[in-house]
Picture 1 (spheres, helix red, strand yellow):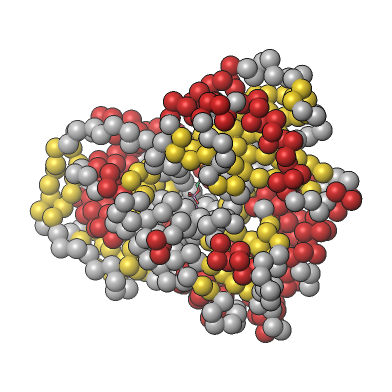
Picture 2 (spheres, helix red, strand yellow):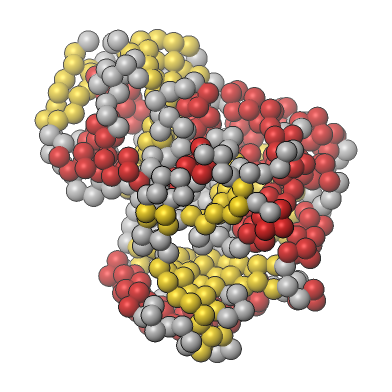
Length: 543
Ligand code: VG1
Ligand code: CO
């Protein structure tokens, strides 16, 4: 086997964002681009000699080619083994589980998640550590440092590894084990949940629709929902993964999962609807004529998790990302458990989960998860909901009514302004930042600013500090607006405006969210001068 050391130079901009490095696919395909980043990961984590690593991705365009390069580079860098999902496919939560189950040194996950796929769309790569979770900020910093000083990478010349056949082969000195991507993950789900109860629910005629959005969860959802739990054939739609996700946008929200929404809001809607994203870590929950916001879903899961076997003893604590609504905080307070507020991105939950401080965590962007892996987990959330529905005998509507009655309703919405010119997006943020001290006391419409700050987080486990994590404006009465710039986009800047208002009056719990939030939206737009500074009259996406 021929080992090569290829001379290269640093490539600007190889800086991971909220969840790994994401760029246009064609950028990843440029000479040395992928190789530079892979070698920088290897160097940043202190080498891979003698180590075994998991490799897999969401199956998008370039997934298979990139995996062949990563395998040849792992072999050249002295890794002893690679465990790869068949066909190069692993959902992100399944990869996290495999890293943990097999005790590997970590894994390479190829995904741009909810971003579209294809040669003219997006690609991504991230490294997860031995705990199965996304690399910490400290590890990312070492990787970025390596991208700035790289002068060569190592690669072997070899035939492509056969990714299609389960079994073990070798690539030089390194073993390559191809595993079924679904079976270990499905077995874990069976341990956590009462599959018999859920099976009985489906046998009683309970109808469900799961939209896999042509992405990675199709085979997982079919194997678990239809084959193991007895949901009717056809429960899973768009269940065959394709490299460009059927030309769609694999982001499970009411805008992009329109097919599912139409069915759930139509006549004869199924009892339960759900969808997942490109790499299987997000989930959307929708009942008949009832969309459940991810923030409310997290609160529901916290309130009812004890109904599932894995969480029967109760929760150690919960955590949510800062822009996520405070609905879960109110459930945690009632249970007398700790509730943590972290920056956006799953990497910030890892320490809390590892330390046993929290059992459940979630984000407003449709990510929910628990200590069973170190990633958010779309199908897991769907199965926990099913377990709760089966155990309680309640409908989605009944569960939501009870949540709002018991804890109040956090009306919630997110406005995304996509592909804004970078300078204009920064002008919005800089303008707000400059006025943080003077905003309190300001009256806008009927609202008065109570506080304004820029969120920073001190990790309670290792003390690491993360600054600049979003600008928060709190209003008297508990309404809140948050501004932050996305860290997963590949073009221009995306401004995210998160809006929230708590309502506890029993006769005001059934308003249309956009109506209930109107004063907060107007105040946020006025204060930020977002329309004036960006020229955008309306957001591109409202979720
Ligand atoms: C977005 C979401 C964030 C999520 C991240 C990765 O990040 O807001 O909550 O953790 O995507 O999700 P940003 O920086 O664009 O707001 V996934 O499913 O794309 O890995
Ligand atoms: Co994702």
